[in-house]
Amino acid sequence: MSPQQIVAVFARLLAVWIVIHLPSQASEIVFLSRGDADRGMRVFLVGGLAVEIFVSLALWFFPLTIARKLLRSSSEERPPPSSSDVWLGMGCALIGLWLLATSLPALVINVFILGSAIGSSGDISSSVRQNVFYYLAEVAIAAWLILGAAGFQKVFWWARYSGISKPAE
Image (tube, rainbow, N blue to C red; front, side, top):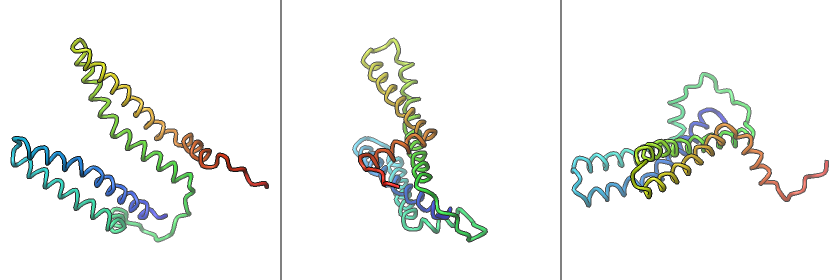
C-alpha cells in the first residue's frame, strides 16, 4: 500500500470514531435543553455537532483526496507490499494508543479525586479506588499493546491456527 492509501484508511477510521461518539454528544444537547442551560451554549453544541458530522462525512467520502493533500509524493513508485504481521503490529499499536488516550486521563482524574477524598467518606474512596485499579489495568494493557505488539502477534497467530495440523513438508 502507498502512504496515501494508508492515510486514507486511517481517515476512514477517524470518521467511524467520530460517528461513534456523536450520540453521546447529542444526548448532552438533549440534556441541556431540558435544564436551564444558556441558549448560547446550546447553539455552540449544535454547531459543534454539525461541524463533526460534516468532517466525518468528508473523511468518509473523500479519504484519498485528503491523503493526497496531506502527503505530497515526489515519486509514484509503489512500495513493496507489507506483511500481515506489520499490519497486525500497527493495528495493535493504534488500539493501544486509543486505549491509552481514553484511560490515562480518567486514571489521573480518579487518582486526584482519591487523593482529595482521603479521610472523608469511605464509600466514595472505595469506589474511586476501584476505578483507579480498573484504569491502571487499562493503562497497563495499552502499554503492552503499544510496546509489546510482538507478544500479542504470537498469541493471535497461535489462536488462529490452534487445532489445525501443520502441513507436512
